[in-house]
Length: 285
Image 1: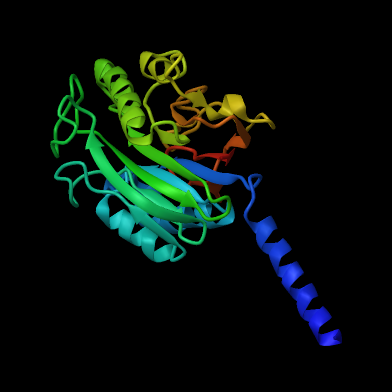
Image 2: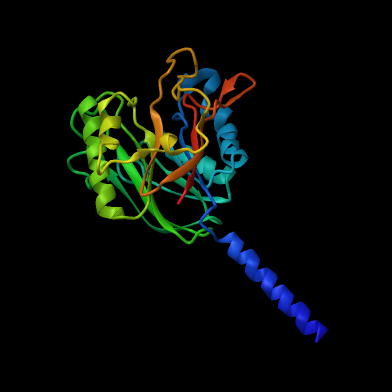
């Protein structure tokens, strides 16, 4: 009888642990991070000197899912090796395989299960690999994934992108295209969109993304704890270069609450982790 009672207590405890482990109040930590492409022109800020710093940014901040920009194939492979607890998806923008910039999505496999994925080009021919849109200087892409959150049991979509740095029309058209793709792919399910949008809050591409009623919400505006850090996400490895220049964002749709939004001014012993600061936010699905 005593043994049966102990077994019953064990089963009840196990049930409570499982119930607590899968609940609606576990935030998903998201990061948007332009890691700067690998080029020898960066001198003391070259990728080999920064790669471990970038990887440690993931692990120290306990990021669940991250959208990166300016990652070349060799950089993605280095990060995958340094971050064995993460899986990733993405392709190169030039050929839809390995050439050119990736906008990969890295995610913790113990937290998220990948359901499906895809890539489209920010152009009038979004399914045409390498296509360049409107007045853009370069081909641009968006990577997307549908995930199931193992902690909450909820499904959601994650989109990640990098808008053109030259084409004003291309940026605004890219916003409209992404909104259409989100509607077609996600329907009414929750969506997170991260990226380097090369657009401030006063410019057309940003305003198009948040336009009511079908637009998205800037996650900073939903943060119950407000914002941490400054208002400059691009530094060019010199934080005096572009004061108050915020062009990296995490947007959401179908999500009502976020917390602990911030720009993390990552620098180690004077060396910048990248020429952009990462944006990190906790999102409640």
